[in-house]
Image 1: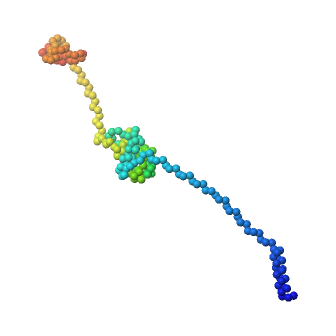
Image 2: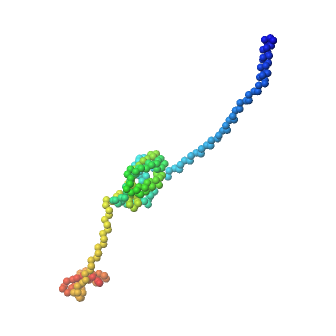
Image 3: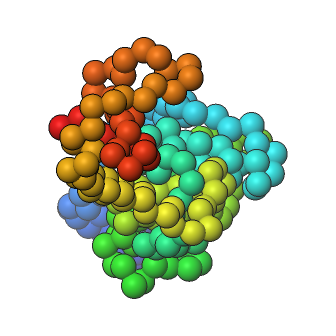
Length: 225
């Protein structure tokens, strides 16, 4: 067999073997994941506008607005007039107010620790009074005020205080007892001559005193019995 015939035979066998081989299956591709729709978050509602707005430009000016706010909120708890010389408690507090008037923080600079119930009551009043006037120009403010607390449960703030008495008022004087009336002497009772003084010629009014002369020539005043 020639070399050419051998090559042709080898090529034919290769083609025959290739035709008998099973082709590999096509590669399977995973289907694309379905698109997940993300819901759009609802817009956050804007908070309501502040009830009160302060145009204070300094901490001192805002302290006045804060004190007025507390007086308006607790009008029935305000002590009217000058405070007594002895107070039940004095407390100094610093408040931190946010741009919308929210109470962000408060702290005692001088706490009335000797009367814990008064301290707790002042803290409750401060919290319940929020929101405070919104410091529009300041954006936020920290201010200090002093609570002047009376034993009656009423108070004043140092910013708006009406003052304090130097001493307690003196107690009202007791009325003096009327002096006992002296009984007229027997000589006066027996006297019959009535002496009229000038300008008093008329008879004495009912219930009034009468001037009479005694037996020894002197005069005496007799009260009606």
